[in-house]
Image (cartoon, rainbow, N blue to C red):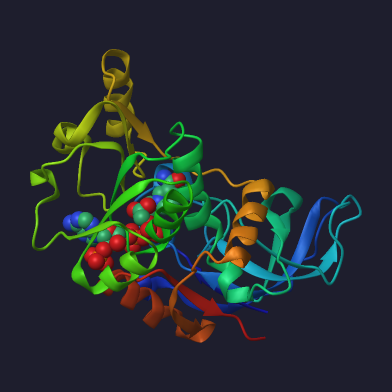
Amino acid sequence: MKRIVYDKYGSVDDLHAVEVNKPIPDKEQILIKVKAVSINPLDWKILMGEVKLVSGKKFPKSVGCDFSGTIESIGQGIQKFKAGDDVFGVINPFKEGVLGEYILVNEKEIARKPANLSFEHAAAIPTAGQSALQMLTKNVNSIKGKEILINGASAGVGMFAIQIAKSQGAIVTAVSSAKGHHLLKKWGSDYVIDYNKEEVTNLRKQFDVIIELSAKLPFRKVKKLMKPESTYITVIPSLWNFVHSFSNNIVSGKKYKILLMKSDTESLNRLASDALKGIDIHISKTYPMSDYKEAYKTIIKEGALGKVVFNILS
Ligand SMILES: NC(=O)c1ccc[n+]([C@@H]2O[C@H](COP(=O)([O-])OP(=O)(O)OC[C@H]3O[C@@H](n4cnc5c(N)ncnc54)[C@H](OP(=O)(O)O)[C@@H]3O)[C@@H](O)[C@H]2O)c1
């Protein structure tokens, strides 16, 4: 079977295809024939060695973490799934990668894919969808009627965050460059801002929740946009952010939180059900697996509107 791997930290040019034996599941593992894989920024952050303290020195590594596919075989200890089930999920990207024809997963990493949700759409859900859901349910109290700023809203996490926030009755201000504004509006944003034309920090408005997805708007810059008892959530789990948030949260009512997305079957099921009820999962481009270099180079250069997905034809 084919896998896309790299043998050292570097760039997209270090990715290459290899032929390896189809893996065999142990007692607690499930072998999946992969049908689709979606791209996340963490894929190339790991590839480029930006998080090597966590991802370690073991090579070769494969790339990607979100997938969908069909169960080929299961270990003797597997109770909840059987061969032939269509599933989707996310693996721990610091240990393994999913861009290949077959992968091994454990039961906790997957959920059933509804029959009328495509493999591509299912693969687009896990990381982006669960990140948005966890920010808006676990990190803040009820957001009904609350003012929410989503900075960096036109890619995967923003797509889910806008729609989940709107479904819970929030008032959403979404920020991206102009190329994504038709989507920010389609997903339900009440106000849209082009960061090339307007400094978010100059807004004459205060928010209950600020979701920062661009990695360009630090807490200190937006504090003045926060109501007295409000929450800022960043997706960058750097040491600096942990230290700063810890010291801030002891003394301030303006809370500073850091997302560490944790996958669970219940959230995957909920997001699949939301997708069937009408949450728009916008896939801006699909690539065959063989175009892995072009896909990663393009998304790193141009960004993504919604999600970008590989079709794995084998
Ligand atoms: N900590 C966790 O557990 C966790 C989990 C999931 C994701 N993440 C992180 O969350 C971030 C968002 O991920 P994503 O999948 O949604 O994709 P992404 O490609 O990182 O999305 C970036 C967004 O930021 C916008 N942007 C770029 N420059 C901006 C600026 N100066 N001001 C405002 N917005 C700007 C982009 O819009 P334009 O294209 O218009 O520039 C785009 O909408 C990534 O850094 C990812 O690694 C963290």
